[in-house]
Length: 549
Ligand code: ACM
Ligand code: ZN
Image (cartoon, rainbow, N blue to C red; front, side, top):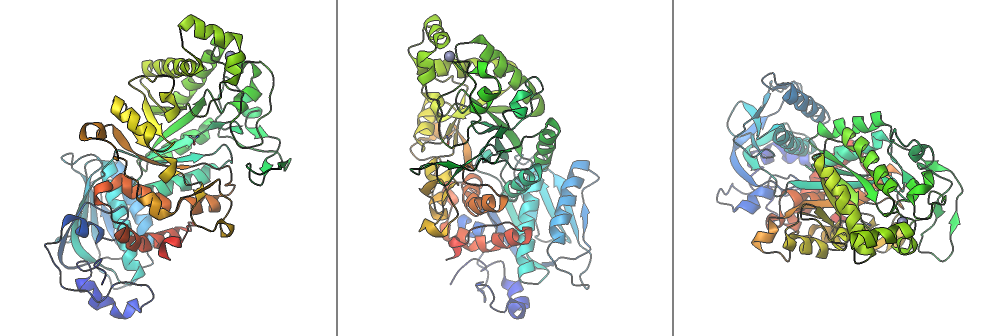
């Protein structure tokens, strides 16, 4: 039998045998509590995704009430978290009028690590959530939300008594969204952030500039959005197909500065840092379409209508390009308080640079070996400028090719090799290998039954197997900051499709990032996902159900 509720449900089973009714495959009846369980088993017994670190079971149950009071000691920030908890609990539908008043207390104990928390439903008259910082309290609240939701499913208001002590393995747990290939509104972006928060993710990598659209208003360069945010049509079907047709329907959109501030504040209230990506030197067609002098040839090009990699990139020879990039970043860092700015670096063809007198002059003047080193020059120069302003850079793993500074963080996407190389060199790394983290890949075969994807096959079981530490010794492991899910949107036009690609694969990445590779357990994850999927249902999120097949 499945051990998931061996401990949790000792008392609850008696209460719920009737309510349960066999509608879901829950493992009742349960056996007597066994308090000598090893750590990992006890972790997934709490039916939370990502799995918690430690559960100490208590005796009996705690009765929840509809009229609960949340005590925050008058702290404004905890009040806000308490309001969110109130909203989560309102959706439980547990409306039994006979419940007695319950207190839930939220508090900060700086003795804990900032993102750690202790959720105590152990012995007291109240539930307490104590975090090392408000972020830790927020994560404890997410756990409580999931536990309560489980008992909503069972239609009882009893939480088995237990104490959960929990915290993340990795400090960087991210999700990237490409809003350039297809545009998503502020409300849609906020819902993406809600999904990250539910999974205890703490970074939102916002991919804001591309060949097919520039999506962030920059006061000094208005053409970036009047021209660069719109394309005259979009390729139909798959770009890898033999014949290309375009729909000729103008498409675009961008975020005003107020929109950006709204999203950044919304994310911050959920303890998510927004890391903007301003791509350079490649994927720059929309910028060059707006200001042709940014390219090597100085010729006007259109905002791209197809998907792929395109030859016109920022000219790395002309000083005006650096002036432009720095002006843009000046406005970007004013909007985004993140310590890290993503400056792209991937997929930059060198054909224009090879023919460009400015670029060739730069190579000669700087004593660079080739165009790869010219890219390294550009990235390092921009990094230096940002560091003078207190910001670090992160870039895709191609930044290793032209020589990388020791302070750059590498985002490994072409598999894990770039990340492994960077960690061995002593550079910080975020692991987002396409082998495990590219959620634009199909998640089930045969693909004829799936919505259009970019290609590849990445089922949730495979996502779950990511080990960000693979190939690294203990010293090198210290450079792995964490993991990230990437959602590119060439073939994703609508929010429903976006959520379907994201869920539940994001949950698998969240468990790698929070619980850590050593304590993962796919069978347990799949069981716990039934409960998390119920929250997806309650929130109206679309998700793939193959994990339950
Ligand atoms: C990427 O997928 N081109 C980073
Ligand atoms: Zn050039």
